[in-house]
Image 1 (cartoon, rainbow over the protein chains, first blue to last red):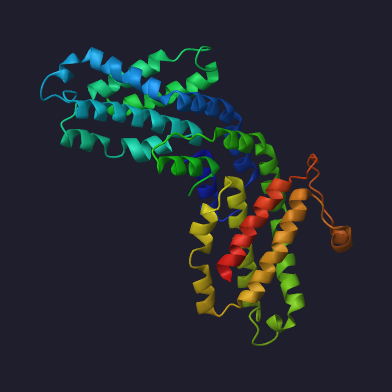
Image 2 (cartoon, rainbow over the protein chains, first blue to last red):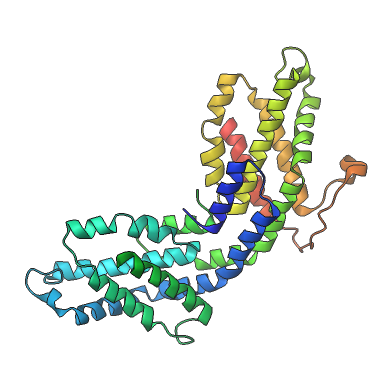
Length: 164
Length: 184
């Protein structure tokens, strides 16, 4: 899993050397930013259901045609699956906040996502709308500190870009 | 390769839940500078640790450097020093990551079989690793022994914490123990 620490170790290992001072400084930089990331991860983890639920409602509100017969949100089963997908994205964003890199999103969310949505004939615009809603919903200091919100929003932007 | 953070993520993903034990990770972050000091203490003394460990192993078993021994001639002694350094290096990586996966995947996987095929004696290797384990503990605690180091004693001089980084000493020792159990 790609993170600052694993990248540093992989580079040191490729050169066959012990971790150098500059390696340790990169790790220290990552550790110093970790407090904000972990704060965002903690708040998101505690409210995951509500955040994902609001994002899901927002995308269905913007694209009501999805409720029409035969569309992606038409039956209870489909609705549950749509809500679950949004929740998966939010969970992967929490993981990425923990790791301090986009590794979990890349490996478990984005790899193959285009092919899956094409095979299932799912539109990506509603996902973009749901994540954009979450992107603009976060508010400081109500939800989390400013630095934590920056880290959180950056990952939402990354997920949105991967879909558009 | 995983680190302490991605290990928590992989564990949470197995049950599709969010990472809930964030306090453990916060503790990891809070003691981050101690960890970096510990890694630095080992990396800065690595060549001394390796040569002392191999020399100690040979002192206890002189047969290794007599004709037919596994550290004779120089070519095989050099291979022995190189291997001790490789093992110490991967232990250092594991200590930096806070997770043993790099040590397991890149160093220990298949090491026992390789040594068996090459005829490297396990008991001697384990002894050298045990010496490095004691040295690593002394360097992380920054308490090298006066009696043994003599005029070559070298202190890292980092800030002394009340418990002398007992948890990091225990963690580093667990990685050395992992090497020992993988070999025997």
